[in-house]
Image (cartoon, rainbow, N blue to C red; front, side, top):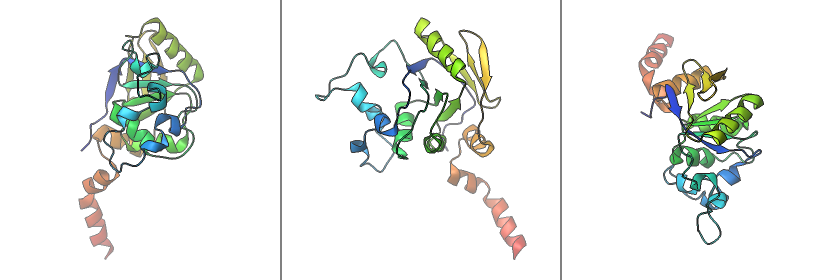
Length: 196
């Protein structure tokens, strides 16, 4: 059983870059591992560290001003190859939500499969969110999965977001696809018996 998602209120990490692809999220050289653990330390590796392995202080993940469980990213997040490792890295780092005005479809589904909620907002709402974070890095955002709303607590403005009803059910109950099937085992067995 994974962590259930209900209402999350958190500060945000801003990444106001467009067209961030999966190779920038997790470079290909880190794809050798077969378990999901440890990928977070290499999230945005080539932006976080120089060739000698020293932290690049100006990169947002290395800036103690910012923190939280919500990554606010520019338009077209997760484009490029379909590697699930990108979603593993985001989840392992500790992000529960990624906000953008557009996600690549495969990456969006990979995030959902790894208990990270991709929230699609309008470009205007996204721009205002970046502005609010710049003015006050400690401002919070509320993501309400049951109501499917996101609220910028600095301005009080909210937007609704879409989510597949099955994935919503899984996130709210902390179930992956196998957990969901197992939770319906009795119904499946009853259906099989009735079909004989």
